[in-house]
Length: 80
Image 1 (cartoon, one colour):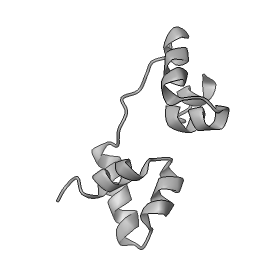
Image 2: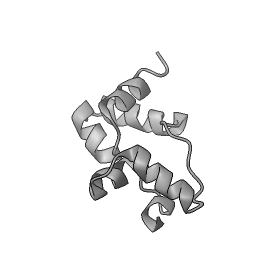
Image 3: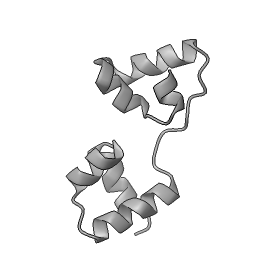
Image 4: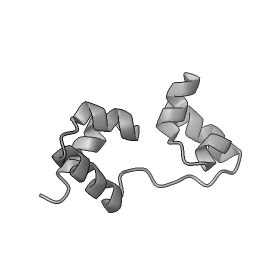
């Protein structure tokens, strides 16, 4: 729970512990953790766009920001 409250995503924590993200979120809710809104904020999308323009590949952005391919792709095209 401390990792989630420190900013780790539920998806990255679920991978780390070998469970489904839904199971991890259910556990966090049972522990009365404040569940963050999922998705990429506009500010984060702008950062992804900047890094991509500077030469980062989608795969690099996915790893660096612990995001799925779809989340990175949508963020890069958010302001088209």
